[in-house]
Image (cartoon, rainbow, N blue to C red; front, side, top):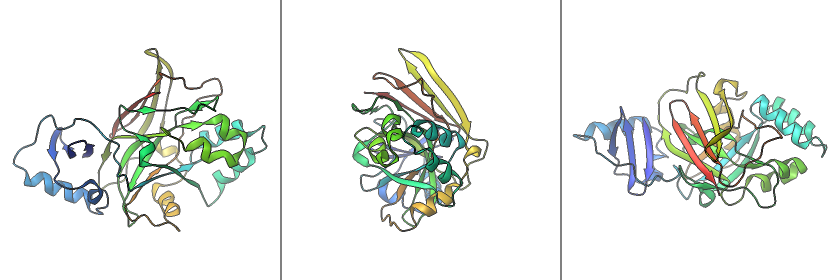
Length: 275
């Protein structure tokens, strides 16, 4: 089932029917038994509602944090090595790909994140910018994964490649991420056959498209969460981007007006425009 955050409150979708949820968002995303709770809410309602999904918001509470993991796919490792070769930083990415400890970093606070249909940005001081489509985990305060959403980790490859220590500037700025359109809530792990798709359109024409199965991710979602939570507490829960396996080549950079569409099988599609 899918849980949406709307301007009028949470809405759950099951079997193509919509049901309003009379609960605050923060309590829902910190419910270790959310799948069971939502099924009980649906069972208690006599009939589904109509036209409930209006004004979608990012599926995240202002008190939560968005974290991210890097170099979890081979393509990401190669891309990061390519962009940082001139600065002498390429060896770091080869080492982290094979290391026990993954790369994890703080990505964004709520106010810098767009929802489905919102605007993302490219930095004015960057010459090479790409979206990074990522399966994103919804994790409770206790560290349990209770759902999945789609994430767009906007990145400045020119700043990132100049020096590995510039990663926070390449990753965190106003409009640096998007999440949505919903949380896919399930009591089962995602199948390995699930694919992530990225399509970028410019003036209504496709200028880049690619896809990759989540089975190509080297580390498991549980492993990534365990490192994010290792010495950090998240009393309001956390969202964790799991890295990208799709990296446009050095001949591509985003432009203002581009449309970025990221789809993940079973979850939906997140669409944003570049400001």
